[in-house]
Image (spheres, helix red, strand yellow):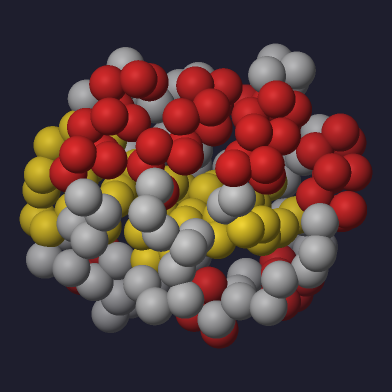
Length: 170
């Protein structure tokens, strides 16, 4: 599950291992955007599943819609995918629930964020694998505040996703 960022440069955030401060401070990163958050998880905690199931089902742009892909692969790896509006209330509740779950793999494997026009970030293999990539359309001040609060370093790098777009990873 990726949000393909097509800008030449991205912010690369490393050493993200704890989902609690990530979700508690996510409002700082997406401040100023009308944002949708996508969550993908192979072993989703039932408390999160119950809460996600109560949220309105959002229609999302085809390029960010992974629910059909997940249903097609259910025999290989069952992947639960949910989308939510990044309102203050939703992000507060997501952070609150995350704080009650000890295993990061029961929270999410993938997190993406996008507006109706552009992707904001992509965090594949969240909290145990890849680095988070943030579009340079997100103001540097947002990235600095977010990273400072979660204690994670960031750098500006050439966007590795530009090459991936030719052959999307599976």
